[in-house]
Length: 213
Image (tube, rainbow, N blue to C red; front, side, top):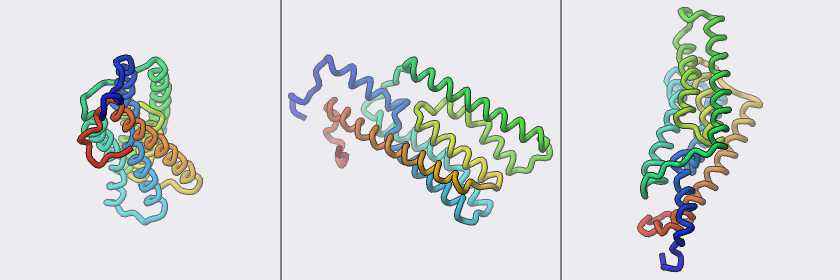
């Protein structure tokens, strides 16, 4: 990159702050991958017959997505150096409301199922269902930072829990799911393109190879 394209010192702070968002709230390609997983998992469960091994495999999709987020963040979006995003008050409030909602709903679901069936009488599929539902708020607290994260994470965990228990989503649910997936893809592509602009503005594009904006 030539000298004229090098950012001025007074722009570096803004660029660094934008780069830091990819340590938490900006997912980029992980949102796209998560959306594909959501669409695929819901479609497979809705339209194909599933045996026990297939249900177990589908129940792993949220963890595959979480792993992809960690790998992309570590080896792609933060590979030029780790810069942790400062949590703004607006983001903190947004997460507080979302986590509060998840805690309330998860607690209600777990208590209702256990109250009706009795914990001892629960079959293995329902135990897996309860574990996934109970784990969701803790996973969200640790790994969900954006609206896309919450949409994708909730859908993937709900799908995994229901499939593990022997059920499936169908009908109007699929339209909602595909709409959320489309939103996540749009947000992820936009974030990825912004990352490429940040990379080039910081003069970090040399040697990256096949990546283009």
